[in-house]
Image 1 (tube, rainbow, N blue to C red):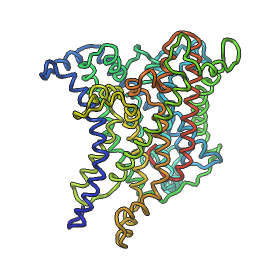
Image 2: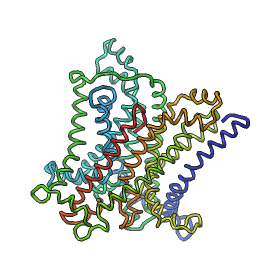
Image 3: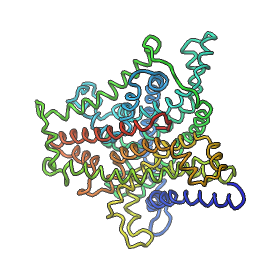
Image 4: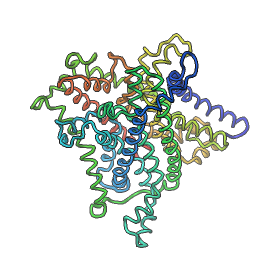
Length: 558
């Protein structure tokens, strides 16, 4: 920050803006998580670390670590192998319908994990079209579902940089005699390395902390650290084991976040250097057949087939076609499996997601606005770097941990005569905590791409900071905020981990209702789960497609 009264006023203003999201993070994330982890290591009022040895010395723990790492690594590698050709086709080439195709491949990312699990179960079960493969309940089935979910992360992250690379460098290599494949491996891929590493770190994070998908497809047979935390907390009330596992998970995702942060910094530098370049490379079947073939197979087999099959299955009752499963959504299921109807749960989900999106966008926009500033002092740069990293932490901590932490800390918080656990705001706040990092990562790259000389010019002409923000930052950030709002809404609609702890039977959201229907016996309940999954998928897809239209040419990470 600058020196003198004006510099001090500016410092105070920025500190005030930063204080709001920091207080929110401390109160609704750091405190609940720390309290839960700490409770696992306090016995009779004294520190007790023996739990570490007891948990780490069991073969089961290392089996869980192995499955978690294996699931994350295999899911990441397959997502990259399939996603890089997709990034080329959808971002480096131009063709009719490209915008719609980009929006379509984004849909899996915002689909609730429970719906993804149900869709793959319907495809791979013995009665499904791919039942003969015997993949139901296997590690392969979980990885396929995770790749389905994370494919768009690779395509959008790598494609965002690829479309801005200067094509003349590759053209020069080709003119010197390099084959297309050699130019790709010696010129293009090295330039894309920061984006590929960034995408790999984020995908590994999502794969290793997956909850709903693993619960539906793998059960306890392929349990991970995330699902084990849930089981130890909910079924056995063993907080000490859950605390040790939470710390193990933090170490794993902390390493992934470190790589992601480093790669992200590199990527933003590359974007700055190449931001003026625009791709105008028409898609040609004769030249790009390999990339087109891989992308088409992924779009049809991996993304389209599970969703189409889900719709078909939802319309089958017995041996015939019927809307019976959809008509049953007005009931509480076979043997009163639910406390509310699916339509009531849909209304609750929409209301909850609306409030969660408002909170997430409000806090996330403040974080992005503050972090996008470029202070000259070392202290200012360090503070901004810390704030940026702190708001990425919710991506790496188990949503289950966050949800249970809410339950044990928000009973009369800070001595106030308010029991937030019975408040209707608790679920949307938990969902907002999960959505805020995605809002920040969507808006921040756009804010950082604003030329600081525009702000300096406006300030030189006498505009106060609020007017500079309104006339320079807002017009550029508005589209990214629109996309972030849609993404926060869709993600909140599908949030399952924290909500499974916090919602009560009479206020169950749609993902909770679907999970309960799957767990109840009877064809009627399973048919209702399929129909409810279609409803949830249609809602989140429509929200995301609408938000995607607001993106324009802005480039975020998602």
